[in-house]
Amino acid sequence: MVEQLTVTERDLRRMFDVIDRGREAGPDEVYPRELMRALAELIPADDVTFQVSRPLEREFVALEEVVEEEVVIEDGWEELFWQSYWYADVCSRPQRTGDYESVWKVSDYLSAAQLGRSPVGEWFRLNGVHSEIAVPFPATGAEDRRLLLFRGTGPDFTERERLLLRMLRPHFIEVHRALERRRAGIPDLTNRQLELLRLVAAGHSNTQIARRLFVAEGTVRKHLENIYERLGVTSRTAAVATAFPLSA
Image 1: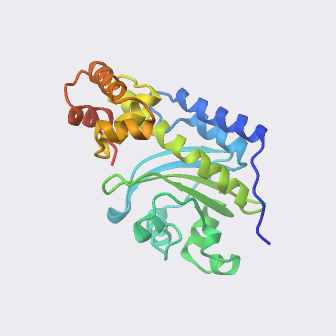
Image 2: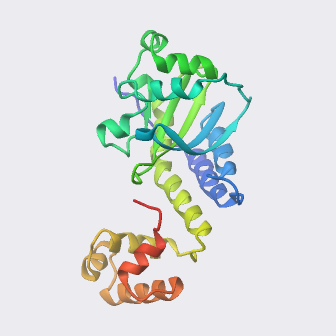
Image 3: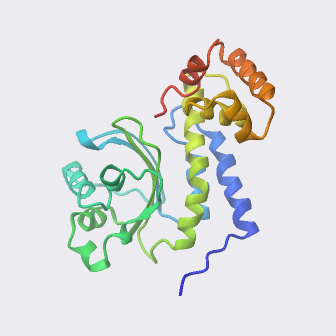
C-alpha cells in the first residue's frame, strides 16, 4: 500500500516561519542559522548543516552548522569523508546522476546492514550519526551546495518529512540567492521582479514572459524598466548578470 502523505495547516504555518527566519542571517553566516534552527524544529534533527564544497577537488569551501551537541572528530577525518562521499551514489548522487533537484536519504541506497559495512557507515559512527537526508541546491560550476539534516538516534527520516523538504527547497534556494545578493551589495528586487528576471535569464522574450505571467506585454516592459533603474543597468544581459552574479 502506498503511504498517504498529508500536509496540515499547522505544517504550513511552521514552514512559513522557517522561510521568514531566513531573513535573519548574520553578516558572517554562510547560511541563515535561524532558518536552520527553525528547520530542526519542523523536522526534528540533531544537526543541520549547509555545506559548500568542490567534490572533484576534494575540498571544502564553506560550512554552516547548527548542532545540539558538538562532536570532536579525530585527525584524518577529511580522507574518510571524501571516501564516503564518493562511495557509490550515496553522497555523490548529484555529480553521478546530474539530478540536483531530488531530496534523498542515505537509506534510499543502503540498508542498515550495508551501511554498517560501508565507508559512509564508518563516517556516521565517527560523527555519532544514525540517518541523513540531503537537499541539493542547483549546480554552480564545480561547487556543490546542499542542506543536510542528521539524526543520531531514533527512526529514519520519513517520506512525509521528505515531502516537506521538497516543498521548502525552492525557498531554501531563494534565501541563499538573496543572501548572496545582499553581500554583493545588489539592491533587493521584489519576488515578481525576480520571477520575471529568471525568465529573461532563461532566454524568453517579452511576449513569452507576458504569456507565462498572464500579464500584458507592456507590463513586462514596465517591470524591466523598474528593474533596470533599481539595479543601475540599461540592458537585459546586464540585469541578469547583476541580479544573479553567483548563480549557475
